[in-house]
Length: 140
Image 1 (cartoon, rainbow, N blue to C red):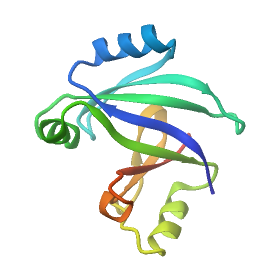
Image 2: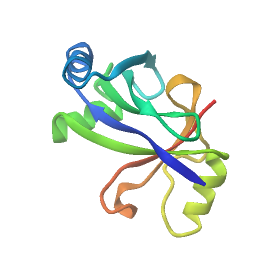
Image 3: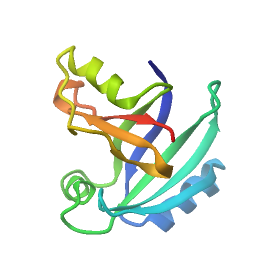
Image 4: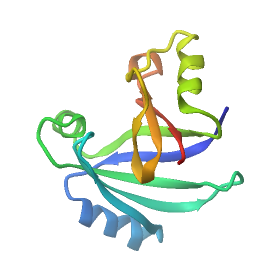
């Protein structure tokens, strides 16, 4: 069952400047920074608030580390801005993806991959989700 909006992913050219903007302007808390080589990004998670299921809601800022990464390609086409929305599950992300796929929505990965802070993730095709790239997230 999807239980929350886990995060909103925002593509940016300068991670440090974008983190400073969200922290200084909105008061969001720096929660985590990492490089995800598989996804080709340097990313920061900024905590917005706690949620009722013991997790939290975040803004995820994504800066590409190589030109062939999906985020770099997206930035080249669209510029900075909202890249995706992520919904959290309290169950198994593969089970969630299978259930959604059974309803005719394409899942982009055959198996979940590693996401931020040790999570397991997969994505749904934006053409099947009214133009929105949608991520499913299972916390570690």
